[in-house]
Length: 216
Image 1 (cartoon, rainbow, N blue to C red):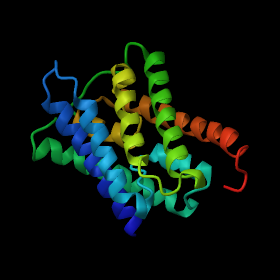
Image 2: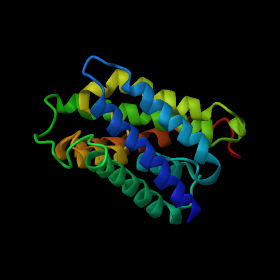
Image 3: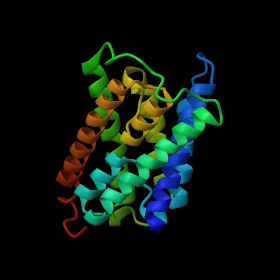
Image 4: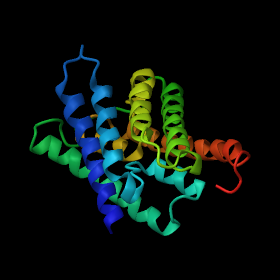
């Protein structure tokens, strides 16, 4: 149960930061990805020793394929992450006045293919970094994994966020849809692309890492 609580809290504060920062900053302020990456970083450091600090169903899928999370934990990890995201979205809109619950209208992004590829690549990069910095014996005990993970989100948000919203996380996509930051069509595209990106990252990780250290 402790692991699920940590996943809930970490995902809550990640999505709450997204909601408050993206809704609150003026259009010409480009610092939102810095705040979001920093929020993820500190939550990873806070909860990594308890749950692994996934805060992202796509990361959980990648870690499952890596063999570093028990399959029995996966459903509750994902449920806790999604519930944390929904609560953050609703509180942001109703209490903080940041957003409008499920208020976004519209369909797929104009460049649907570009949006899909952007989400897939951004999630691939995130899960790739997580697997290499936080799940291997060769990097065990390192103190940079949280910074690396947070900065990956920041970098990918700057590089790819304009295509579909820069979710790179199905829980964030759901939270943004509940908060009105994204419509459900775009969030759904993100969900699919994020899981595919995570799976591809896990496959790529196993192809390159296990060949170097088959005992890990």
